[in-house]
Length: 82
Image (cartoon, rainbow, N blue to C red; front, side, top):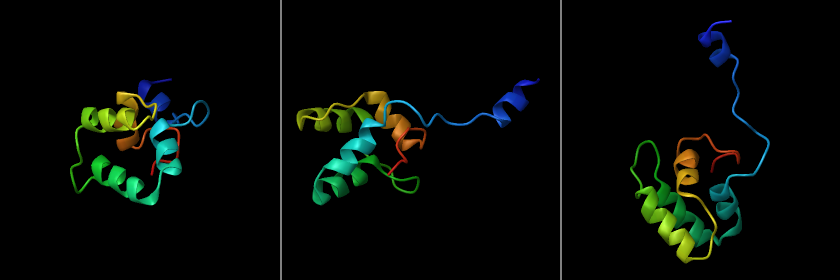
């Protein structure tokens, strides 16, 4: 089987630890949720750097990883993404 075949049949993981960014988004107050969504950005609007978002989330007491923020932004997390 060729690499192209393997990749064509590949699926994103759905089992395992949920995305910590999705978890935070589900748990925080609506005002904070909107602020985080703006900070994350969209394909049309650039957000804040992941390190800035990470520092803010950790300062607020949330446990997230820097790479989790980037995976979430790319739509490759395990939480349904936004």
